[in-house]
Length: 483
Image (cartoon, rainbow, N blue to C red):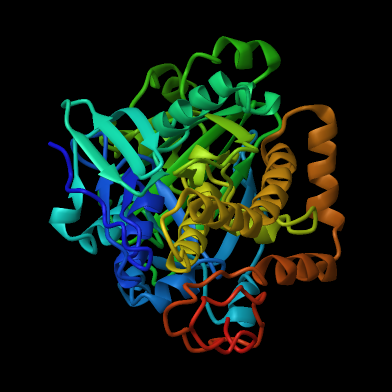
């Protein structure tokens, strides 16, 4: 099937094709719908599977969900997280401390919300009209001309639009096709030819509903969050209670150079993998909810995911009529939001649990900034599209780069097992002044991008956000009074 001819009216909005129905692709679709920009989402899989475990979202993205009317819905499927218990897991389980209530809510009015990962997918997917999303539509080729871009999918159909957005994840087919074309032209930077680096492997899962009598605190109105540190094994592990009497759990191990090289051919996409060995290694690890083996046995095997964590910040985010967002252009060592406030003193740590995903927060921020830029697009000429994409990258790159660099350092601080990393961890946890932590939290919370073509949400806290570029033709809205 070939889509109808494109509208050549310079004032008409662009027709946008989105490859990938992950969090970034779905949120971009929702925002484009509100901006009255035509779009269609092409997802390579037959359905979105509930893989991965915990997600946590905080004030860097919750105002946007508030703005588009989804924050109250998110509250129904999440729990606020107002304490974080840290244990030593060697010999016996020993409480090291409680980080207490995060200060982000004091500054912004938004708590940290924790929930099972698939619940956010379901919430976003419900907002997409069925006729605007197609499944089992893997993109296998991309071609461009001066008037538009054409994709061919695995079922031999062709689709045409003005713009293609690659929101198709770490091993993005859109990025690979774009980079192949640029390499043929001789325009691909050398740094973008290098492979991603793998430093950690993790295992995650979400249990079935559990018996509250056996698991105290399971039905509390806020999430019980724990992190267990170990000096005698290469692992650290975590668990969070989430709605419906479930527990999201995680175990992560640092890879040495040999292990990293051995796993170069293995991908980092979430999915049931060869996890039996890792499950056996962590079964006897202690948690306040029993052993990790108890949590594994309470988890359906088809939702246990093993993944090798990679990181890379690509320099090239767009070319021609193609632009990348999310993991397709910046893959982070994803770390948990609660640990943002645990080690802010080292700098702005983002999401620590691999299943919680600062990658998701960054991808959502990409979506809203790109939607703002597309809303301002004055024509679909190659020159106008290039300027639009360059503006998008300019607005986002500095923030992504800062988060990327700190996520690398802080992953080693929390999960690193070398003598230097363990020593640094001890010093930070025990001696870092609270005022340093508070200063870092405030700096991190300033960046809260919103859709500038929509009414801004009501302020919930005293901390102002960084000003954003206003959309053309719209009155600059309360730039400094919004959280």
